[in-house]
Image (cartoon, rainbow, N blue to C red; front, side):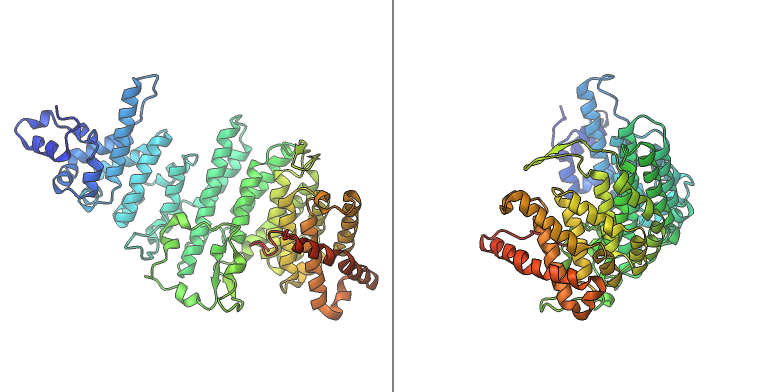
Length: 558
């Protein structure tokens, strides 16, 4: 019995006369040491696996559907799954002895790619896409040439957008050949292929069609919307990373250039929210997530002083080679990155301009502003302090996040467009209304702090004209009366009120005579009295008991 025998023993038996009947590809796939011997580059094993017969068998296993447990015995299902996974591991191993033979065998590639033209299961998609990605890395040009010969390939992939592996494969086409972790631009054939297929607009089409679909399977719709959003965002981040090394991709597949596709997604989300009376918010949230990340990602920032160094082709840049590290968190520590070791302010500039994106999105500002006042009522929730009746809800919180990002990252024209629909006043209304929503308080406070500590005059005017001083004093007095002086019983936004007040105070001190542009003399006198009698004593008390005024005084978003 040869099952379970070491790989070399199987190879010896295979070479003996008549051994072919007993030792088969399945025998090797059942051997636990197979992958270890493969990675150890066992020469005899590689010779066996690189034969046309073995490669054909591996492709068959990797592309075969695994029957449902109800149709066959469970043990048989497990065995077929095991064979499929091991086969895909071998074919995606990027070992030259195997990949060099595989990539020139057109009949095997044809068999592999035919999988995409039929109904596709996640398990099979995962195995096959792993193989295709490996071929693109190891044999980029011949693989692209084969793909180009399949006129419907990209369209076929778009038909399987609900499956994450096939969605990821679209972005992987923008990866250049991998070569010792050195930056390689994507091949012109790949960018032309995606541009020819108008991929970005078609992704937006899928998003809008899914939103408008009458299908009752909301879970499937949500999954598809999520996947499409992630692919578009990945393309945007890829555009930025390529821009850092002065590589441009066609505008039609650049989300920052072809911004109408993004606006269509936001518009579809708004329409769906309205038609459902505020109950269906997934489309709008996914669309805004894409926009927020495109506007705020740290990836789109490059130090002016090191700009030339960042753009040298051929130097290792892991964030370009490794797509998994491309996505920068919204909460990344921006302040830490904006200063050098000697605390000298660092100058940054965007890699890719967001001006076109902001201009396109401005047509949605008024309707998004209306969402903040017209969203469906929310169920009461219990927090650690009390029952919150009619809470803000996730939809409005996402819109608040979008607007605060626009106020912070947008151009002067964008801020003025927001001011035309009184966004800043609306955000302050929500800030003072929902005293237990810490995320809301943080978003609004960080945006105000960002404006007042910068030189953005349009943003400063937008925030300060909302009667900030009077509202801070009024809310402080209200909380003091409700808590009878006990700050532990005060509203949840007390810490943020302190930050707002102290930031406004510093801004007015710095402004000098310009203070009267924003406030009249009576308001300034009242605020000075408030700062000396209420604000500073409260700050001193919290310092003495070592309670943070606000854990994010200089939060990354501020």
